[in-house]
Length: 223
Image 1: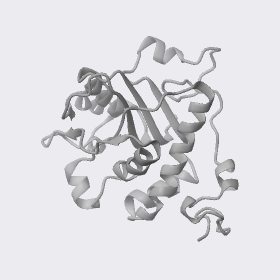
Image 2: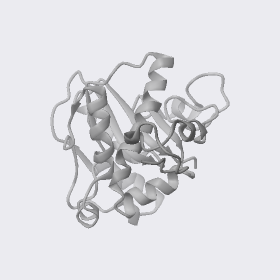
Image 3: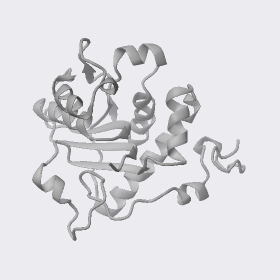
Image 4: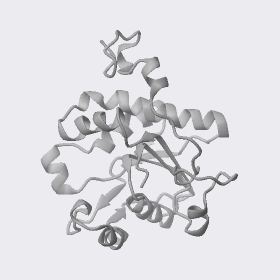
């Protein structure tokens, strides 16, 4: 088994990406701990999150939406390269663990994932966020609730809408299917762009009793 980035032999084949390539992945500079976007304040939270506090509590991403992860995600989602799931999930887990070591993050009570539009699930055959979330839950030894959240059947696919339309559409897009009172939730997605989707989901989770929602994703798009 060889590294999927540099093609060098792997000491541990199930890792998928060698330790050197992991070290060489693009790194964030100073970012807000809440939204994972660049900021220049001396505090951990940016002015955006101070003025418009999101419903989630922390967001951890591996890198910006740039190569090489951009290319890997593209193949994972659109070319059915599901064999990439463990390597990509491991990068997410390592990013979370690094933050845990630095700031003492507590392990979540349960892990779930952003649900996929039913038509997109039908055409693709899988939810990429679910494939990433399952091994992460296993490594954390946490309960995995893949169907905790669902999209309303008659909702319009976000990709077909303008930015303004997305913001209004997303507010009524998701449903939390059970009570999560006094639970801390880890929500998994592959890419976070505007943050509208995860904010709407986090709002639903908080309304259903979640005490904390942390987002783990592969890439955070810097707009």
